[in-house]
Image (cartoon, rainbow, N blue to C red):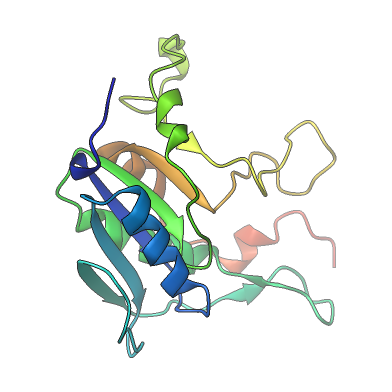
Length: 182
């Protein structure tokens, strides 16, 4: 199946960083006919950035992964809010979601969209399989405290399926730390 870039909306989600301009330019280069939707935070300056639509979201904030000093921020709610808002603005059958601090280097991932059609209907969640970047994904067979943790960098699929994946309740700090003893 060939998917034309005109049939794809690209949701670039997250805060504006020193990488965002390059991210948007890479998307425009790889998917020249796609609609680029920048979904970021209210009050953000987007001057000089190349996109077709901008969505300004209220920042839901963050919490830390633990109470240890120097711990990283858990931005899962920011990802949910900005991704869902961007996906709801899509008007195409297909959507590609990428974080605003990464660049796209090719579109070969689309070649895998229909490559593995077999699926067990008892475990089917989506109309079609969704492609996810594996970088930063967690191995559920390891002793990782976050099993079944997909990467947050990029997803591709039918827009309706990506909405099923991301249009979920925000995570509470209690939920995020369910496995912590301290």
